[in-house]
Amino acid sequence: LGIGLVPFSPLGRGLLGGAGSGPGALPQHDLRRIMPRFEEANLRRNLGLLGALRALADDLGATPAQLALGWLLHRGPNVVPIPGTSDPGRLEENAAAAALTLDAATLARIEAAVPASAVAGRRYPAALEALVDR
Image (tube, rainbow, N blue to C red; front, top):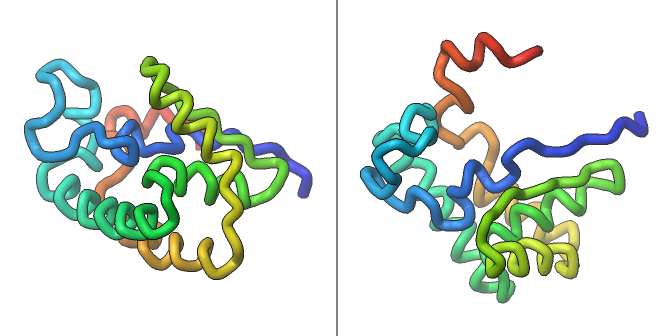
């Protein structure tokens, strides 16, 4: 349809870059502590998905974050992810995702490693989700 899309939080609120690598790993006042995807049981399941993505990334000489951004960049010219970071090293890592060439087979492997239906937990707690314009 030619509609532009800017994916919000394309790295899963830092999870694909290594933030929240285990229950209790986030700072005490971190907002992600109230996010359902970072609740202990959901986080454990999501870290399992991250492990599958990490194995694939290792095979390709990339990071999980780069694969996620590369997957988005291969969705078409109207999809423009803008990952946030305050770390210059992560900025360079994220920018390098633009140089990835992912063929159809690799895109399919990414989707098989992390099917959307397997991600555990809602994006927001119910009170915040009610504020999201649908």
